[in-house]
Image (cartoon, rainbow, N blue to C red; front, side, top):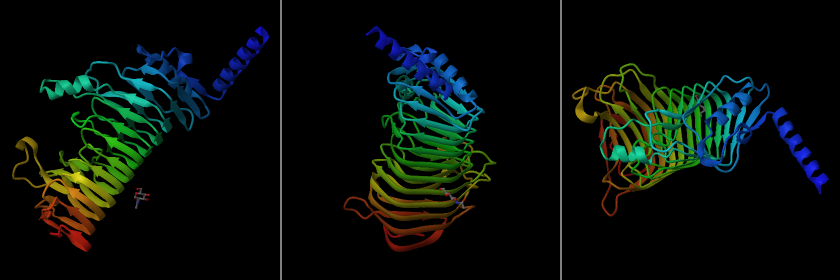
Amino acid sequence: MANTMNFLLTALAFISLSNLAMGSFNIMDFGAKPNGRTDSGQAFLAAWAKACRSRRPASIYVPAGRFLLGQATFEGPCRNSRVSIFIDGTIVAPNGYSSLLKWMHFVNVNGLEIIGGTLDGRGRALWSCKLAGRRCPIGATSLIIAKSKNVLISGLTSINPELIHISIQYSHGVTLQKVKISAPNNSPNTDGVHVQNSVGVTVTGSTIRTGDDCVSMKAGVENVLIERVYCGPGHGISIGSLGDVRKEEGVQNITVKSVVFSGTQNGLRIKTWGKPSTGFVKGVTFQHSVMYNVRNPIIIDQNYCPSKINCPNQHSGIKISDVSFSNIKGSSASKVAMTFDCSKKNPCTGIGLKNIKLTYGKIKAESFCRNAGGRSSGSVIPPSCL
Ligand SMILES: *[C@@H]1O[C@H](CO)[C@@H](O)[C@H](O)[C@H]1NC(C)=O
């Protein structure tokens, strides 16, 4: 018996050592505690340092359990072409809220995989503060991928962030697949996936239920594919707001297809401030999607001017062109199912409508156009006003 025990222990030690040799780092070996109460920050950072310094692709393992993690920056560049983080457990943010803007922050990493796991941002305390109209911090984004390349996030679940669930910034080649995002519909500012200044972002096979935009794309975003995504509750898939500042990069080559919107505020929206700016939006394809009870299924709004400060009587400088909507059907929760409210100074051009069927209960739905040009083909209901 003792001999068998010894053999097993030796074998385990050997496996553990060979894992180290192969660059596999279990956060438990660095002192992490799966009890949800003990701060495991040092363990995460120590495992990251080992994995990132490894000369071969390396991995970090987060086993089952709840691991408390405070604000953490996982910084590259790393010495290898890929660090993989396999998560079986839940990573939980500290309770209460602080004035930090970031929770988990990956920066300057070329080759990163985050597989499985749950991130619990514990945003409730901050939402209550915001909902009560008190003065509160902005809040922390749960997961930020910044200045990174070749990133895969697969099978990750994000719940209850203080602010944004996942934010992609200044990055190149980021794929999100089978991601599950969830927060209540009254949680303020909890965008699902936020993208800015990034090229080559794919979101597929994912479910997004949240209190703000399911996906939001800001200035400097190119080559995005969003496919097979469920959105709702939430504010829909949004390009914008754009043009808040005078000098801004454009947004181009965005494809959204096979998306189901359910009970959302918007379906596909392009929103720009009504004031001068150098930005543009061109080459947007929106196809094969279904709307269930969506307030604004299709909407371009170039007159965004909340609080009527610094923009009344001005016109958006953002030029919107080549935006096509095809094979979109379902129900609108308001009478105007399609809105193209473009800039007087920069009318929308090349708007395409093809095979649309949006209904509004038993009443006929309508479309609204201002400064918008383009063409429709096939059957378009409500009738096009382009
Ligand atoms: C547009 O974006 C897609 C990714 O959605 C990419 O595959 C394609 O090459 C891009 N097209 C151009 C012209 O860059």
